[in-house]
Length: 100
Image (cartoon, rainbow, N blue to C red; front, side):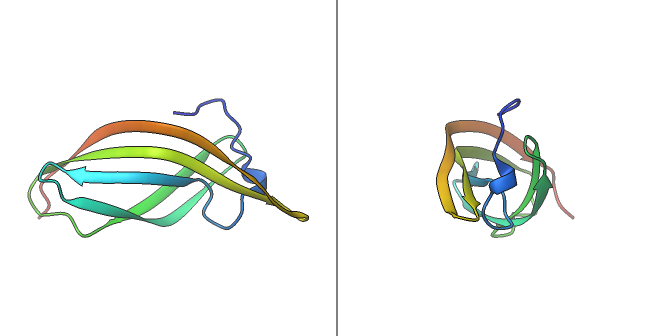
C-alpha cells in the first residue's frame, strides 16, 4: 500500500502507531467499528491488529473495507510535530467464512 515510504514511526506519539480511518460494512449494510489491539514495527514497516465490533453474524459474509486515510502523529522531546497523512481511499473486500 505505502511500500517504500517512511512512516516516521520512530517519533510516533502513543503506543498505537499509524491511525487508520476505517469504514467497514457487510453486504447487508451493517457497519463495524475498529478497535486497535496491537501493533509493532520499524521506521518503514508496521503490522497492526484491530478488533471489529459488533460481532459478525454466524453466516458467511462479505465485508467491504475502506480505509479513508492513514495518519501518523509524531512528537519529539520538544513537542508534537505535524501529523503525516496519506489520503486514500483504499478499498478491498474480505470473504468471512461461516463460523460454528
